[in-house]
Image 1: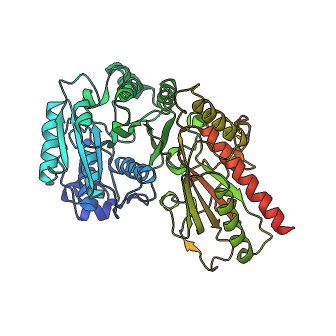
Image 2 (image 1 turned 180 degrees about the vertical axis):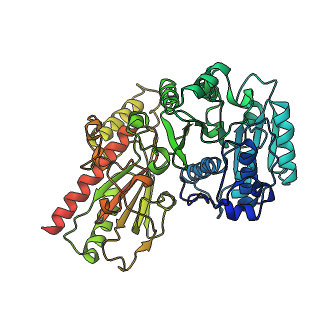
Image 3 (image 1 turned 135 degrees about the horizontal axis):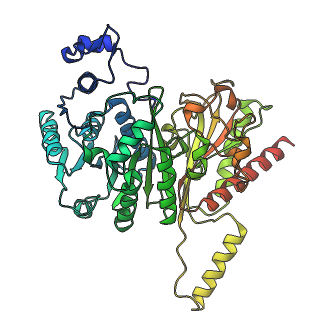
Length: 508
């Protein structure tokens, strides 16, 4: 569960019932409710939304009743994704965000939660079912959110994404979100229930349109992928929740087949047994951190996760911090200044790239960021560029191909096991980092042999990290902009070599 989810430590039904007469009638004893009773599920959802978000919601008996903690996980993950990949802003404070909820349902749960959590968010919410549209409109109205949530009747539309609104909007939409129907048919839904070893954990009251679609959730999201190929950067992040792990694999395969190189995979956990996934993709070049884009811990999904965007360079632990860290800082500045950069800056002010990495960093000494056009540090790349310039000057080519942007951030971190009172240290808080290829990994034989730096790329989420796994100080590199992971790997190798060589020379 997301670390900022208010339900991460569970819910006291007895306490909640004191503030909700409807839920009080559904209590079993004084501490629980019957999760197989639809009315109990509805009253629980209404009580949670009222207590934590001051939302008044009506939930029809014959429409899907949303699980609030899991829906909140999706909203919080989206916020992390947006903050981590949003372009630089001149104005302070949180960015103004516009999202599209595909199939908002009778509850309009996602727009309501998003607006309640983040005052600068607004939504378009689509729906095809007339009864759900009516209920959603009522929920939006009774929470006085008509000016922030625009409900769209798309029952006559041939597309899933509302192309007209997206194309005509004055700026790119920040995200789309969706909780598509799971099943391919009514028979699929019934047979799925029969094959379960245990009954579902809670009652399901969803209508056919909410639970069933031709081809199931994979076909639905694949249609979204096809439609996004036309709209491209009119939306920054296209996303959808998925109910089956196998669906994640198939959707990622579809993205790769479609030439989409920038994608993310999230994982949402509710309670001890309920798990959902999310896949998001972008036609832009802003890269999300591993704590957002590579969340699933299952090695069954490992080959379907995006390339890691975090690289760790351990620092020698036999030197005192007071002498080591200033040296490392100077080496980082020099190394990043030895090759042409469009922009570069270094300071002790915490960068957003590290501020949003919940649970993966400890204490920041200093950090920096930079941007280049393509690979400007490798000799072969520089020779190639000079050759192109010569050919352009001689008229053999009409123009020099534009190099794609590459952006990076680098931070020097001190673990809690070391002295943290050194001058210039800025506290971040959180637990420590685990190297994915560490000794004792249960699936060590599954390490990708094509990746020479696999053991240094950080790719497991905070929830699976062990505090003792990252003692000592280290450099953390973040890939922030780019489309080619080969350039990112080359950058990591170059910077590590320069840093370690520089430290060796200083020691000598």
